[in-house]
Image (tube, rainbow over all chains, first blue to last red; front, side, top):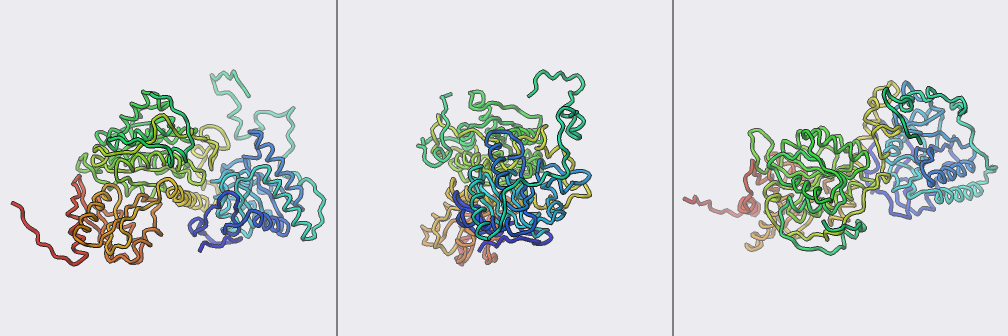
Amino acid sequence: MPMEVLPGPAGYIPTPAAFEGVELPAPGKALLHGKIVDEELAMREAAKAMLTRRNPTIFPGPLVLWGWNAGAMEKAKAVLELSMEIPNCRIIPMPDYRPKYPKIDPEAEINPNHPNLTILHNKIEACIFVGVHCHYANLSLRMIRAGTNCFTIALCAEMGHEDAMVSLRDVHAEEIRKFRDVLVQVRNELGIKWEPKMPPENPSLPKEEYQTLSVLDYGEYSYLLIPRRGEHVTETE
Amino acid sequence: MPEQRVVDADYLLLEAPRERKFITGAQAMAEAVKRANVDIAIAYPITPQSEVMHLVGDIWAQGYLKDYYRAEEEYGAMSAIAGAVRGGARAFSATSGPGLLRGLEAIASWPGHRIPAVLGVLTRVVNAPLSIQPDNVEISYLLNCGMVVLHAENQQDVFDFTLASFIISEKVDVYIPIAVCTEGFFVTHAKGYVNMTPEDMKLPPRDPYKAPVPPTDCEIPPARIQRDAPVQKSNFMSYLIHAVWQQEIWASNRRAMKYIYKYLGGPIEVVNPDAEVFVVASGCAAAQGREAVRYAQLEGLNVGLVKVKSICPFPVNEVRQVLSKAKAIIVPEHNIVGWLAKEVKAAIPNSDAVIGGPRVYGGMTLPVELIMEKVYDAFGIKKEKKVVV
């Protein structure tokens, strides 16, 4: 009998759901609390969590934050459309996977090395991971289950995640829009009134002024932009 | 070199026509590499463990691989494999015994770095004293790395396991390295019949974007892990990050099991499932175990065989189920420590039924008669031992 994957806190070092018999679903199916169910049912439960729990938040990862191909750009649009339909939804990005020094700004971003800090600081009780590489999503989902009471939803472009309370697989822009439609339906059934609007701006990120942008504005990444001694850069993107 | 066309992986592994050849285990491994669309092979082949990397060098010269080179030593070879794979290439290497142990620090870091490489391990004695003879104690050193460890019984297994490993290791929910182990000399230098897929067909190339981590870890944020400070260095890090990372590797290891079922017919093979006494063996000890079962049947003794193909992930549930009514479980091995017997004992509730042996090592062969002695003991049959002068 596989374990039931419920919101935490599960404890100091919880056992991964994969060790406890939870298996990833076949195409067309999804995981709900560790059980393989129809996608529609899992979507409805995910929608309920995002509509009824405190401070619903979407965590988009590099695969949707960076416009590295047409699919990523379309998916990013779909994520925004979804966020507009969730009352008081916030978007907090996971732009990369590197540990943050000296400390993370939990209102600006989430990081897989210590995702619990962002969850706890913002009192997030329901969240969606989308566009995060599976390895880092799994790390985050386990740490969140260990130390917080957050209901986690994984919209995975690959095979899904055992440690999320709801895990959908093969999710691209079209499937995100399908989830949005299910969410709107559930919202209406619950009698929640909401006019679609964009989530608030990320409070910690200054607006980028491209006219005055200097190499030094890239902080720790700046060395990647400055040619090394003796290096002659002939081609740029 | 014939023109090779890319075919669907499932077709090549499960449906493509096969041609029978009489070849050595080393040739079987190189033939699998030939059909695997490998980008690069990096070698520091300890000599004279097997010809595998020499043969892979030959097929590189024929144009089957894009690149091939001899590294400065084993640590360099295994580190370079990590770099090549993180950079998006499909990579292969093979080693054995002391060479494996010399490269082990790099190899043990592969799973954590999510390196879906395939490593041939052609076992031989670990020094000292210096020897070049077969002994598979080195497999025990691989069992705690997190990588998938398969153990081939014969030349056919070597071909099938190697070819399938490229596909299994690159599955997004697995994405860890696979060691294909077999006994040096007994399998690598001996010939056997191997049914092989057509030479003009190969696997699809690796898609480095179909991955649970970003495809490069070289210079470009946000993908670096090697060059960043340790994940626990900051006061604001949790030690839990390393713990959940390790958990993820072992979860990935378990996820490989469904692909072992799909492409290798399951992690175990059972002969005579209703037996009273079982021989549980892996690698070429399974071949001797198979022969012992035949001897026993000729004598009217109800003996079965469990051949373990996947050592890690270990098929706990499968072994437990098959052995649930076993009166005695004989585990013949080619090493002194009895790593397979330990795994079997840990997997089953009736562990006192396990007879840890017979074991041979240091290059000794494993006569079927040695296994039969344990079979007679299990059935309470006393046989006189004669001194042959």
